[in-house]
Amino acid sequence: MRRFIKRLKFVFVTAFMVLTLVASNEISHFKISQENQTLNACVINNSTSCLEIYKKPILPTPLPNIPQTEQERFLSVIATNLPEIPQPNSYEYILLRAYGAAFVDPDPTVKFPSTVVFNNERETQIFQTNLTMEKITGTSNCYLQQSAASALNKARSQQNIPLKSGYGASDCTRNYATNLRFWRKYANKYTLDKVREGKETAILGVVAPPGASQHLWGLAIDLRVSNAQQRQALYDNGWFQTVENDIPHWTYLGVNVDDMPNLGLKNKVVRGISYWLTPI
Image (tube, rainbow, N blue to C red; front, side, top):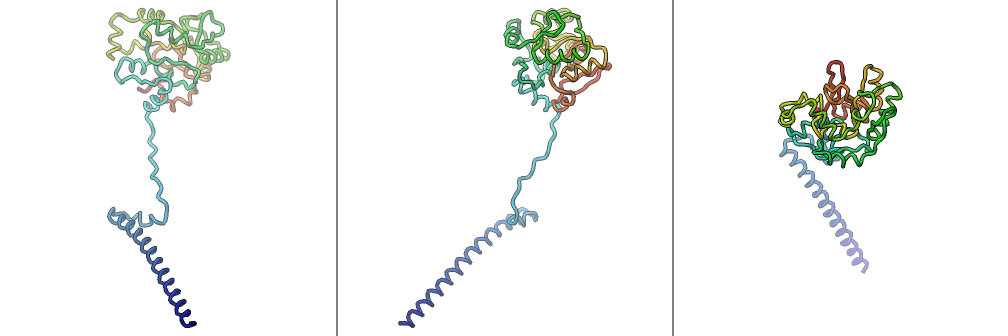
């Protein structure tokens, strides 16, 4: 009986060892198979850099830091205020190139039209009715959007900066009729068609086509600036010249001069005047 029990124990222990060895061999075979597959892939791809791939984690390859162009930065920035960018070479795109710098303003309280040009007085009035306006201190009837007015009032408290006309209304926010009147003063009946066709652009630095003036948005004013101190006060409060060759015309951007490159605007000095222009 004792011999039988000893034999039974021997058989049990032997079977257990055999099963353990078989299981261990299967696991090792599986690992080796996996490693062989990895190594085979490396050989097929003719790469030695992945021989150690099973010893360290695979990290994603970082994308190169590709800098945006001025145009890409500008269009990206203004998309917040102008969701539908006009098609290149269209009349609206020509106007955006001439007057679109204002759209970089990051202030959420500043309102912008959904298009770069109003078709008539009614469209202009609908937009202007929803603006929060503030009077420019010391004027008779000069109003701008609140943020623009507050910034200009601060600049004028630091330096004496007179309006172009000296008193008000037409230098500040205008209606469609005033915009049209100024256009007819400087342009003839053929000029607008030439602008639409891209054949005439010089006029855009003198007067804006009907419905396209920044003055309609409550974000532009005509000033008489004659020294560096006045200019610096305006710069410090977010006001800049953005329409090439329109010397009295100042636009509220609500940013610092150091921000300009990040916004995509390009600096151009013309006859001593520093303009910040769109890059499109």
